[in-house]
Image (cartoon, rainbow, N blue to C red):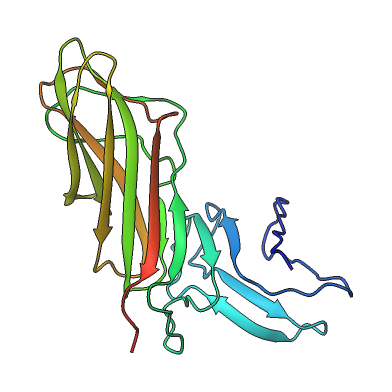
Amino acid sequence: MADDAIVNTTVVTGSKDYTLTGVQEMLVKAVRASIDGSGAAGQYIPTLQMLAPNGTVMWSAELASPVAAGVSVDMNWFPGAGGGGATVTPSLGSITQSWYSTSPGANFNFNTRAAVVSNFPANTSFTKLTSTSHLLITFNGDFTPGGTPDTVTCYMTLDAAIMTAFSANISVVGGGGTCQMARTVKGIAAGVHTVGLNVASFNNLNCTLLSSNSCDMEIVEYEATTTS
């Protein structure tokens, strides 16, 4: 039987449920949820549960580290991936989640050789699920230069620190240019992190990052070592 996706876009406060009918059977392969934590007064732990018809909790899959108050997250659950708990060993090489950027409402202008914090991405919060995983981070972004040729540098940032191993220089002339980066990042602890993009103009010219419609960033978290 082919896989079928169940999509429910209804927004609720608190727990959100999906109840099977008497004739349905379900084999859970993946679950995704967008959680707006902006109104949370304290830490919270995103948790997926399977309940029996009488309400008994059959199993729970929860994030190993709590999410800070006021922080929103996009959560992904996969069988065998684990959330960093002591009793779960994620499968080696398994992809535990994919995070995608969202775009701001306006482009970003800059004109300094010193790197400045851009407005991309709009969703800066990324929750790493395990401490033993690696991150594959990719970025594609378009720029327009000032009146003369220029060299634009873009830097990936994590928790406001520039990751020097994650940068790229591009020469932009005429109509503009595209910055493309792909890096594997190791040794990042599980929990909530802040991602961003810094940019610089070598010749201090008026440049524009087309962040509103021509930039995208993806983070793929995959299990690299066992938790034993």
